[in-house]
Length: 149
Image 1 (spheres, rainbow, N blue to C red):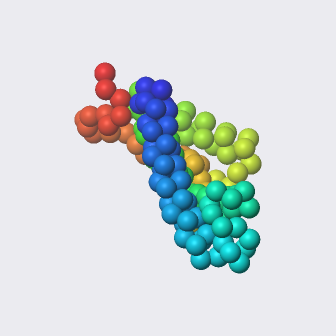
Image 2 (image 1 turned 90 degrees about the horizontal axis):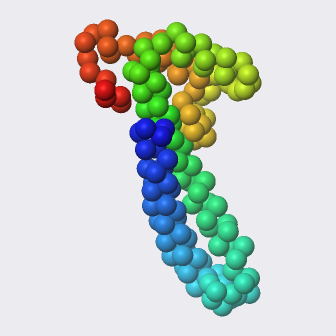
């Protein structure tokens, strides 16, 4: 991750998404206050009584955007796996490390696609193992995609 600058890219990505979450939350809070505020006992978004509503709105936005964060994370993890294989050409060692990780972590190595899509920040271990065993562009004379000498 360090070599591919995933930390900085992830930070920038997260800041951009959070900006839009907060912007959307402000719009939603203003609308909710104008529609329901008097009935719920507050007159403006700055009223301390509106804080739980703001937390609810932000939570809903973050829940809906969970696949976006998870997908971005899975993408960077897959790139890191590609980088490691291109650097070492140790496919069996990579697959073995993922099998050991599956044993030690007690996670489902092959979750349903929807669960992986929504919740997993790393590719499913079964997919990582299959990829580690099959990814060999150097054997076909193809250039590396992630690691350049």
